[in-house]
Length: 276
Image: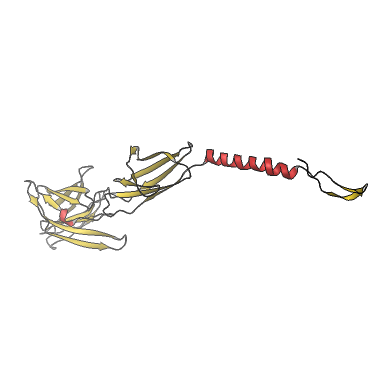
């Protein structure tokens, strides 16, 4: 189709129109539709889903919940969520949101595949659950009374779970359980007292997440030294000793695994062990 316009000159008393250029028509009817079509095609072929994966806070340090949201114009072909290779179940919520139960610490991996074959994978590290048992910090023996200090950094100690068994397998309740605030690292330790069985005392402590720690305490004589032994049942025994003098009634000596005491006391002897 040819367009004409009036020229700036006249010939034989009649006006003539010159043909205009085809560049605007070429851009409007060929180049622009080509760019739009290929842009849409490129988006459809290469579009990947946007995945948001968040770990919610835990209330009991035993279980937690992860929330996943998928943002994509395309339908989802497949969804896979696993932790350390174990597949996890999903619960679908509103629109394209899902919840995932988490029962242990580890690496949470979510892979989403769109209908166009493009996929996205996100990772989240879960470390808010309490899977570590309480820690025995130190132990001391004085006048037949075993004094322990225990702590837990996450769910904290469950004081009602503390008990011991003696050499005759009799269950013993603690003489006292006292909470000690520790503002330095915002945790709470407990001081626990038991009547000592010289032939062996097994102490059990749980945190509020159900993790249990056990230590075995016993004593023996080496000359005039009273020796307190600690066995964690996973490594070598750790020992501490104090000697007696006639002038003093009691002395506590703190020692480490490679350190021996040089203080002495008489009458009532005591030993203090720092447990790593």
